[in-house]
Each structure stands twice: as C-alpha cells, then as structure tokens.
Image (cartoon, rainbow, N blue to C red; front, side, top):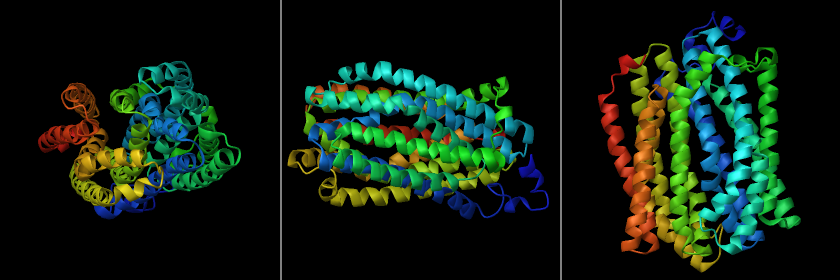
Length: 456
C-alpha cells in the first residue's frame, strides 16, 4: 500500500495516524481532541433539533423528539457496535503495518455497512411503531412520534454509513476529517431545522427530515475523501468484496459491543416506559436533561473511542507497556472531566433546562432526575473508558456481559421492584448511579487482573 511505502523513510512517530510511538499523553490527546469536537458537534446537532422543536412546536412534538434517543439507539447501536469492532480489527493491522489484511478489513467493513443499512431500515419501519405502543407512549404524543420515526428510519442508512466511514478513518488515526464533515453537516442541520420546523411548521417531522439530509451530506463527504485519497482508509471500488476471515474477526470483536449497546438501549426503553407513566411533562423534563447529560458524556465517549484505537494499535505493534500506560492516563482524564461537568450541571440544572422547555412541571421533573445522577458521572466515565480499553485489547465480551448484567438486567429489575415500593419519579433516577457503581467495581477487578503481555 502506498501509504506504508511512502512512510518507510520516516520514523514511526512521524507516520500519520500512528499512535505507537512518541509521548503517550500527547499522542492520545492529539487523537482524542478531534473526536471530542466531533462528538460536541453531534450533540449540538441533536440539541438543535430539541431547541427548535421545543421553542417552535408543541410540548407533544418535543416529547416525541425526546423519545428518539432510546428508540433509535435500540436499533442502530447493534450495527454501530459491529462497526466499532471493525475499527478494532483495522487498527490492529494498521499498527502491525500489515498492508494486505488492512485493505481487506477496510473493504469488508465498508460492505458490511451497506448490509447493516438495509437491515436497520427494515427493522425500524416494521418494529418501531409496535415499540412505541409497548412504551405506553401517551396518545397525545403518539401521532408526532410515529411521523418522526417513520421519516428517520427511512433515511437511517445515512446515519449508519457515516458511522462506518468514521470508524474506518479513526481506526487508521484520522480523527480530523470526520470532524470537518460533521461541522458542515451540523451547520446544515441547524439551518434546515429552522426552515422546516420554525418556518414551514412541520413540527417533529421537520426535525427528522433535517437530520436525514444533513447526515446524508456528511456521508457523501466521507466517501469523496475515501475514494480519492483516504490514505490507509482508501476505498477501491474494484476491491469491494467480503473476506470470510475479516467478517469473522469483525463479528467476534464487534457483535458483543453491538449486542451490549442494543440490549442496554432496550433496557433503557423499559425504564423509559416507567417514565412515560408519569406523563408528557416527565418525558419532556427527562428528555431535556438527556440533552444536557450528553454534554457531560462527550469527554467520556471521546476518550473511550480514542482508547480503543490507541490500545489496539499498540498491542498490534507489540507495545503492551505503552497500551497499559495510555489506558491509565485515559481513565483518569475521563473521570475528572466528567465529574467537573457533573458538578456544574448539579448547580445550574434548573436554569439550563429552560434552554429546551419552559413548562414549570417539565423543569421540575428534569431537576429531580439531574440532581440525582449528576454527581456520579465519574462512575459513568470509568465504566465507559474501561470498556474502550477492553475492546481495544480484544476483550469485548467482558464489557458486554458486565453492561448487560448491570445496566440492563439489574437496572430493569430495580426499577420494576423499587417503583412499586416507592412510587416516585426519583426512584427511577436512582437506578443509574446504582448500576454505574456495580459495573465500575467489576471493571476494576478485570483491569487489575489483566495480563497485558498476553493481549499482544
């Protein structure tokens, strides 16, 4: 591959996207910053929908959009998790400078994205309307929700293909170009939100149309680069074919993460169904806080993604000591940043909620939820960053079972039982810090016992 041949005259530290040499903290944070900015823009992307719908449409329309997080995640995270697994495989071969297998992994992963797009569209159109009924969605919200999700899942292929392309580029150390493309699509999304929702009065449907169009443009930009000059992530149409061994590796690495995220989302839907029983204002209040919580989640997710690539590349290059040190730095950073944001949210939550909702009852519900969970964000950070480390080390089954047991099984069981004993809204909110604590304890045990040399 030209990418590697052109690098032979340089030191590994100078090789673009190579995280196996040079100062650990500098390399990790340099790679993470564009991911963080991209995640921030993606959150602003979602917040733009919420802000425009919250200010220019009805409370029922805002409640419908607020449902979108858990409902859409229950479908697309299965495929997104497999895309992350593909990134781990690509990072491993990139770190080992194995040209042939790197090309096979890139092209196989891209083709899998096309297959996943078709499956997600069918699943979303067939099962999401049924799911809305299972969630006890209030009748006043149902009409808006059906229209929103119908449009969203008609164009869900744009969301999945962007994530596939983004994971391929990040796996070879390019976290900058996905950021550029996300900046463009975020601006487009905000403009279209104002046109369709505020101008044309299309309500929640307008927000869905804006999302699909903007996300589609980001996919076109990704493809434009990957086809012309994507470096190690270049796509050659003539080489697009499935490679059996690569499919096996991608599924082995990614399916546990996909199942983990998908089942957790389904578990959250069960929790959401309990929230829905408190009425439309509870849905709006919790949904508004979820948008703010997403900001606290940004440094966590960004570092988790960076750690997966960092650990995978370094283990692929035989640098177990470097992978271990980078993991410790990443874990500490994620926890500190998340807790600082959590403290800020705890203090100013009633004021910040007014960005999205102005109904006093919705703000009351949002404040109850926010002040129950915000001070425990450091546990959320540790669990997610530890998951990123273990995925990079090829141990994606560990976070899968940990999250399924704690964040799905125990969380659902707790809410179901505790709400009957203490039937107040705060009981639901308490489920989150409880299950974050349990998963953190399990991850500490696994990380302390892991033999890094054996992961090479």
